[in-house]
Image (cartoon, rainbow, N blue to C red; front, side, top):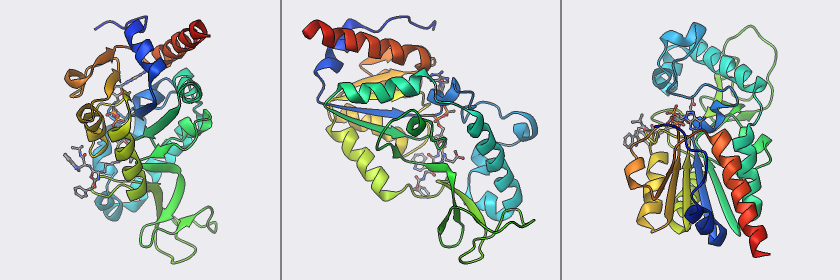
Length: 254
Ligand code: BV8
């Protein structure tokens, strides 16, 4: 499929009239910030590891040093990344509609750095650290050669504050996300392969609730067949186009 270069007028009119827009993003929206997507082959030292194998409590218990160092590498990557026009376009869209809920599977914090407010982070935040035994959130810890370092409160091993496979999502974030999917009149699924649950069920809840549903992705996914609109292309290109068209539609109203 080659990428499209414009947004259907019918969709612009639907967004213009929407009361509550809900957006779910995945790793694809950070791809143009230089952050490799979850399913892209890992580079360099990490090429031989399957992310799904590393992002589990079992992997951490088996080899805490390896998992800690993988996240340190990812944190350094993300530290060098900047929000891209796709992140900024979503922050702008939130100002144009009456109610806007942004749900992300990403742990890179780029939506927040682009100015999005009240981001519902389903899978945690890579820039936050907690301990394995008691979930103590810690901002800093005593210098030591130990890798991973130990919790200054209970001495258990520190880990990133992200949701691993086999771990429950934060109950409040998931509840907010489900409510937003079930009550919105427009749902956009952006840059996600829609393979990881329960996040992947949110767009289908929106279909169930009768919302207009949109998928934005250069590739098709298991969601594509259920979507009312399929925007084929990169988020960093199509979202700014969408917001520009939306602003023109509002100006024509004025
Ligand atoms: C749980 C943080 C209860 C860590 C992540 C029901 C059915 C089947 C399986 C399950 C189920 N319920 C639970 C499971 C098990 C499991 C699961 O879903 N497994 C899958 C693989 C089958 N889920 C869980 O374990 C969840 N916990 O359900 O708790 C429970 C408890 C015990 C036992 C059972 C249930 C926890 C899941 C959270 C895992 N943590 N991240 C870390 O990052 O290290 S998931 C991680 O992978 C990401 O956060 C993200 O969610 C996912 C990757 O998906 P995407 O974001 O979509 O990224 P991906 O690379 O796949 O795709 C990128 C897309 O972007 C592509 O489509 C590409 O085309 C597109 N793209 C590329 N460039 C661009 C673009 N799009 C736009 N613009 C571009 N420029």
